[in-house]
Length: 189
Image (cartoon, rainbow, N blue to C red; front, top):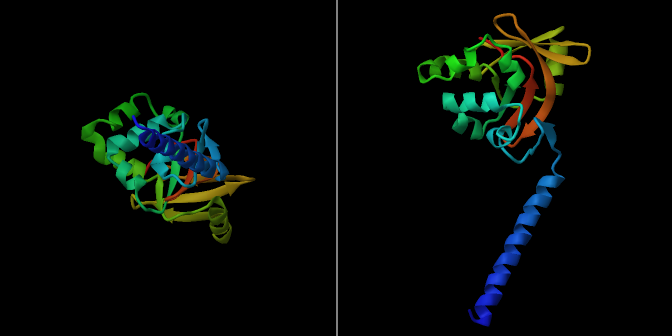
């Protein structure tokens, strides 16, 4: 290798380190929220963040089985009510395994899209809607049915069509294409 080639290679290596350092510095300047032991970056989309959460492995697997990855990587915006692995564990034994089978894709898709609101709704906006609704607010999901939001003390809750209540445990996890609110119960249409 001649001197000019060595200098070019060294310059390229230096530039790649400088660029990766800039990206890392940019990401560390972002206001992140920790979910499942991982920082959630507002510059990343819903899927790019969710796959890093140790608490959302079941949700990510279900989204993949339903073929919704591309949708949730899309422009949005979406508000995702994201049940944790512990929330899925509350379901009757065998439910998740049954839902992720190819023959149950339509049912799985219906359940998952019931956890998504079209648009970006912060916890503050949902609280304001609950207050304006005299203690509750109905919001239509991507699936087509409504969820009822309500509050108790400083906590935000969601009631599904079956009468189950989910508590928002981590609110306002901002994404490039929406927002995630972590919940402790799987919602059922």
